[in-house]
Amino acid sequence: DTRELRPRAASQVRQLALALPRAGWMASLTREVVFTASLLWLLADGTYYDFGHPWRPCGEPVTTWTVVSYHLFLVGRVCYIVGSLVGPTDSGDFMLNMRHPGVATQVLYWVTWVFCLPVHGAWTAVGALRVLRVRASEPDCLHGPQLLFLMVWLGLGGAWLLV
Image (tube, rainbow, N blue to C red; front, top):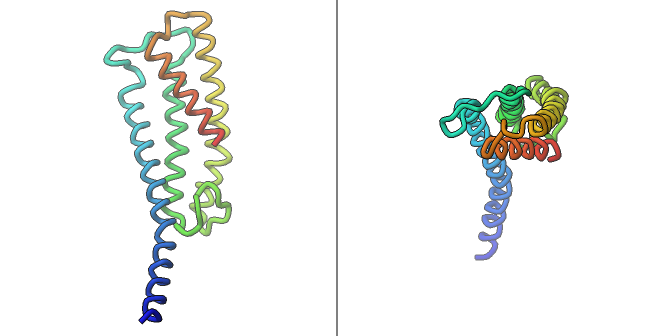
């Protein structure tokens, strides 16, 4: 009888519609965790060494800028991950919802928007200036993979701010 199939099909459609946002949320959270793990690896391995060779000291503290940049980015990502885990899953993306029910999620939300993003933006600009100054005054200091890595990191930092 088709009357019995319609409510069951409607119920299955409703269940699927309710499950899709959770699946998207989990995929987003998985991306964030993988990205955060990559940042931790960069902090542990890629900051001071380039394929087993230490970075050359330059006139500008480029390595210090890189380490602080990783930490700032990591703080922002951790705020996002914790806020996404603590907040309700049906309220949409953590960073786009200003009406979080709990105090902890409100604090994480505002710390991310008022502290992490502006400080990261300013620090990215400082890094771009440092890299440009080093390239102008000491062209041999940043070579090959180090320069490419810094340019990609600056590009990612700028893109993250725009998104």
